[in-house]
Length: 347
Image 1 (tube, one colour):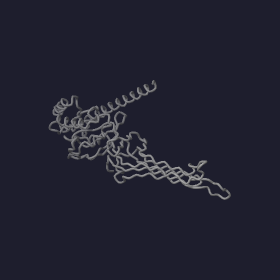
Image 2: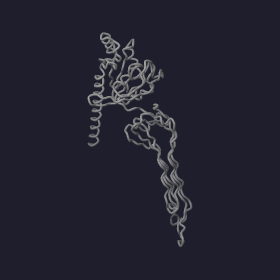
Image 3: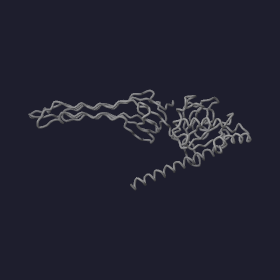
Image 4: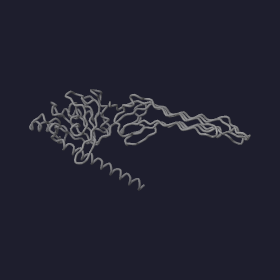
């Protein structure tokens, strides 16, 4: 399945059905009076977050979605049927923007969440609504109201607990394939990963989701390389695992390059908890590992992990540190929710 994280879509809700002009015509009833029914309401356009989707590829092949028009009213006070709704099924984590691609309409972060993007038009009144003592035979009815039409943007930001960042060929995909059942493409050339990948890691009986994004290079926020468009997929993560390859000639400079791109991107990535690790350490002897780890520690201000997906060195320790930070963040979120609920009750 191809990965697509942004799509432009045209939507239109259904028009309301027109009211009916009708008069009761039955044998032996001399003054039947008006009996025109109301028009049916037009269908709505909804967005719904569903399980099992992690791409917007469906919206590459279909970009127009229209709800059905309401049926017109009929005689004998019969109301027209309501037009059927149209539902846009999107992955959990999809944001929906107005046509300017900046004004947020809704953020679909929960499975089963629904949001009405465009309401259908109301049906028009039939002539039975307009009868009165002075107008006993009205010969007019209301047309239905038109539906709403607009263009929207769908932008997917994957839901994950931990995100992997680093330069190209830093070992992010290898790490993901070693600790999860994900099978990203792995090769010895830059930008092997062209789109984000997700995997579920397990440690000490717990599970969490890891997101791997394409590598960053200097100037990514200005469009260099693949750019920083995929950084949105780690915006929602609770912790970042920053991998620096032991093959780099200057590990400190490699760290500062990626760190600078994260801060230039903004959106809170620079403030997220970060675990720094020296990856691909199996190519070094212990003395050189210690030397590069020291250089990296001086640059990042913390003791880095030393990892090797090939030998398994440090992998379990990395997962445990990720799991601990994720659990602490979840607990903090629960405490904040409880405190907020208590304040609401007290007021």
